[in-house]
Image 1 (cartoon, rainbow, N blue to C red):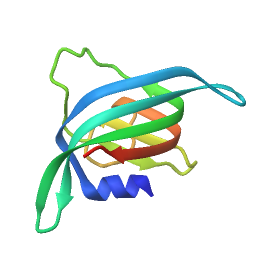
Image 2 (cartoon, rainbow, N blue to C red):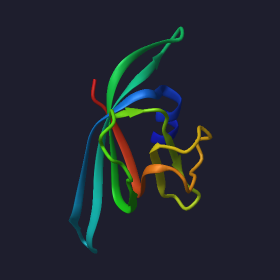
Image 3 (spheres, rainbow, N blue to C red):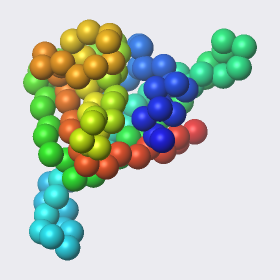
Image 4 (cartoon, rainbow, N blue to C red):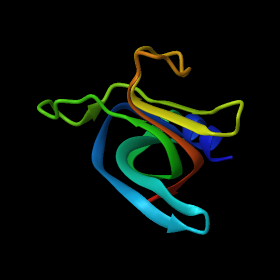
Length: 123
């Protein structure tokens, strides 16, 4: 399960957003969908309370909602992250959550809802 794996093995506090790529109108059998890739710098938890910096590429397919209210004048740092599989089977991520509860909040920022989610560890 990719959500559990990310939440238990990676630390996003003081991480960074490296890039975001949103593909609008990706053709599929039923019409068109929107997909996105988000590349992040994070810490990978290792045994004995050690960690190493790494890069992750998060893949969101069939986005149902995308909300970003950002002036892009500040650093690309992440203070925390909320990533959940919702009861309806969709996925939720906020790269600027309102709080540290790891629960979706209407005040979260940089939010993606998608039908499918996967990730790649790039190093």
